Image 1 (cartoon, rainbow, N blue to C red):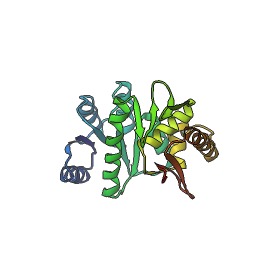
Image 2 (image 1 turned 120 degrees about the vertical axis):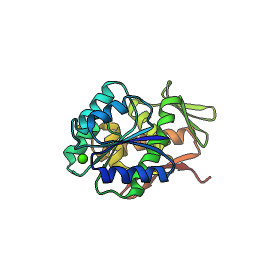
Image 3 (image 1 turned 60 degrees about the vertical axis):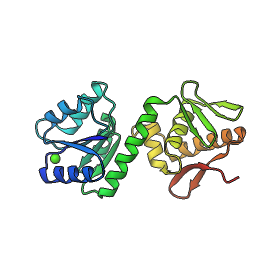
Image 4 (image 1 turned 60 degrees about the horizontal axis):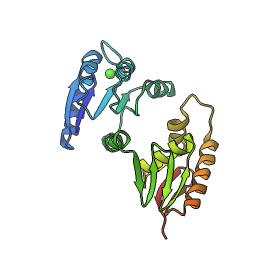
Length: 226
Ligand code: CA
């Protein structure tokens, strides 16, 4: 796993590099946006950690150009600013995650693990499987044993996120942002509605998998007990 750190604060950059190397990653550092973009475009990286305020080219521009070049490397944006508008701009430019400085190194490492774990499945697998439940990406179907149902686009997106993050709690807010986007007028209620659609389909399939509600937080896809 190779990580590119694009960060102009040299102390923070070398702290990040040390942290990554200690945890088994190869890490390269660039101190400005132009050099960062040039390196990122080599497409040898598994994750990019990208600061927003950078000399020569800001992080948003780096990210936009990277995505315009059809480079889909997961990008974790880092910034001292915490305004929601920055987060929106970062996510709109194609960031996969946004972390505000100062951050907990454990959280950063957890993000990197999540981003690198998710990506190969997203890229290479047509079928996601969990405890006998299968989501077929090309056919938009969810199946269990010999039973199968078609999913709508939103149901599919939601099921895919739940499967990729099985046994982890997904907040309503993160589901809303990932599936409906920040700009949309959708509310928490939409998530609840689609979760209930998926639950009906899981019941219909008699699948040994359930979507558990974590009160006041969100949902978790897990193996059913019996
Ligand atoms: Ca900076």
